[in-house]
Amino acid sequence: MKKRTLRYFKHIGLTLLGLLIILIIAGLSIGASLHYDDDNRGLTVSNDGPYVFYKNDSIVSSNFIKGNRKNGFYLETNDYATSNPITHSSFVALDSTFIQFQIEAHPVVPAHTYQDDQPILAISDIEGGYQAFRDILIQSKVINQNLEWTFGKGHLVLVGDFVDRGLSVTQVLWFIYKLEQEATKVGGQVHYIIGNHEIKNMYGDHLAAENKYYNAATILNKQQVDLYGHNSVLGRWMASKNAVEKINGNLFVHGGLHPELADKTTDLLTINQLIRQNYHQRHYPRPEKNLEQFLSSNKTGPCWYRGYFKEDLSQDQIDHTLAEFDAKAVVVGHTLQNKVNRSYDGKIIGIDVHHPKDYQKYWPKGASEALLIDQNHYYRVLADGSKKRL
Image (cartoon, rainbow, N blue to C red; front, side, top):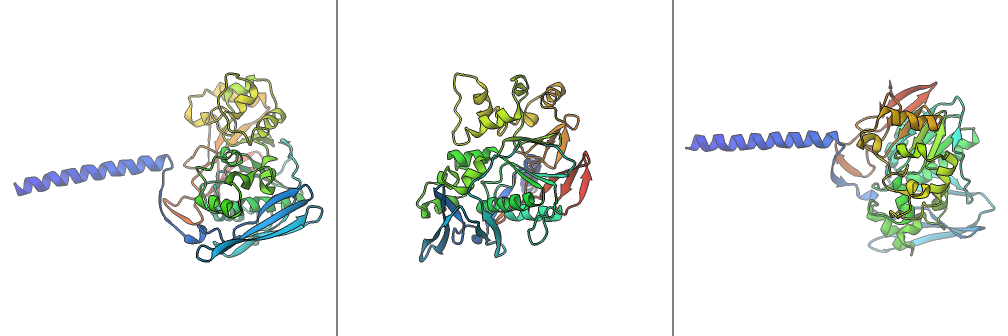
């Protein structure tokens, strides 16, 4: 009887173990991970910033959060005339360094099409992870150890969702801001393509944001949506960006281009204008089915669409879209991949991978990857900078 009972529990135990292994494998296959700890340095709002807001068209107010929970928080605030260069820095608690940049108070809408022979490095869905972003740029020789641009006239393409879910969102945004300035000085380009989480922050959906940023807004005596609103320097800069760009014949878009878009007789200029004018508006389905509704939809809009990986599309549908926009391939983030990869005869390239987080511990940790396009060849770039031809 005792042996039979032991055999029974052994059988149950092995069955449960087998089921657990199957669940882990299934979870890993879809990018699931276990969040098991946080580094408290990332949770505090002290020394976070700057949060810079327009007082009017000629003056901005810069705010750094100081103090602590025990003794109370306060703001270090200064006003600056926008007619003069405004040199600032953002503190990175992770390694006690500073990101230095100049505030440019009047952002310009970028072009939507670029054609040259320069290399392209594309990365997406950093989600507030400054260290992973910085490190893969260093390993890819886009910047050096001093965080200085070294990519010459190359294109760094950031394919959306650089905000939310992480604890270094402020630092990531000012880092992009800095790199954009440095690249422009030597003829290079930083392309910040807007994703659905940038849009969520602009219209006030903060469910995926860390509580740290709600606390920061409270200390600033603002609503959280104001952090990237019309009167925020980072907000106006973000709202100036495109949702779709074509660079050296490749389309870059966070979610994807719905096949029906190819039949709506439009162009990249119109697409970007219609999406941009709705960045601060939450989408709700309406009876009318016009182009603006189609582009703003969280099902069919370029910043939201997941059809390349969630729908049974035909190769003809992909080819038709590319032909309409005279493009070779579409590079997308948004939908998590095990690795940077090509599908649909190599014409759809997914680059959203599980990047490590700054102050949050996950299992598995994840490893950054990027896409390099050079001389019409496509490479998967690993976290150590090594390349694999796609």
